[in-house]
Image (cartoon, rainbow, N blue to C red; front, side):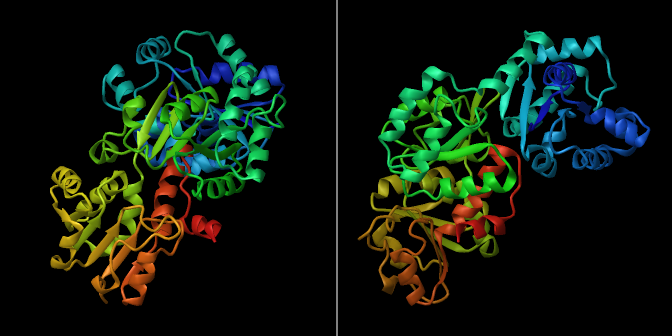
Length: 463
């Protein structure tokens, strides 16, 4: 049997529920905090206060690394989810249940079983601050979430056992959702795998779905990449295409199938924002576009990782003069990345008024495509979809490109677009959309699963 791992904040019931599940499954129960205390001969508060959190995390990693790889029920410390290396070890061939509760419940439980504080803050403030800091990590860690606010350990353990037997997709939801997928353009081999996951008697009822949402999105490399990564890291997930012109329909299917997350592509990156519960307060709110949604622990949370994929390949060109072609959702992420690199940015669009609206948000210049020749940029970033379809032309003529210019086309299918071909002939330094895809996919995988993948591993899987 796979390992059953419990994560969550203090006071959510990991130890009590874990012991009950261990008894009902006949598996041994291990508590990593107890193991650390036995390993060091010291209490956890003592390690924190005497040596600091970094020393504690070193001891915790040793325990995590030495855990049995199967046939065990494991309760972990509240902060284990913050370390990507821990998550890589804990997630492999395991089922992770994240237990959560509201702040009032946690405060009451911790007051009944006092433990020295981890910070100098009053108890309630400490709970609120640490919970907020770890929220993203708990959502990433979760294969399944259980709210223990108003339940007993026995009742919560019963929910765990039911999920272990039947998974989290209600039987009545399977047939209508299969009909939804049949209307898309999923390749036959991939459809066969999806139908097995959604069958009345699936090979593994614990397999979770995740996917790319867009219209069109059949060109996406996401399914091939993510499914290869799931196999590499021992994750019980299947990534597929959610292709439909109606975003409401996609989200309805995602919720009916208890989908863990969605990669969001055109034309839904802006449309999805009012339809999810929370939006990352940094990039996504400023950019105004979401390309990643994580469903976990009773909420849906949106992020933008596109800007990271744009920023990293250009980091050595900080302070350059740049032209950004396009003013849509992808352009917003690119504008955020370019301004974050202190570039002098001009946004050009076929409709100048749209360029103006976006430019005013980021403090950039703006204009129409005809203004390109007067700017003489060092960097050109194409965020338009031109080049994606067969027969598309380059958004720029070859005589507008010259040696010394860096041209970055965010279109990644095909990997070599008409713009990249023209730029190469003109002697420009070129960056293909594959680089952007790698950067944003690396961050997306981290948000979905808490694991930090080396870029070279992604690059190797895309060959």
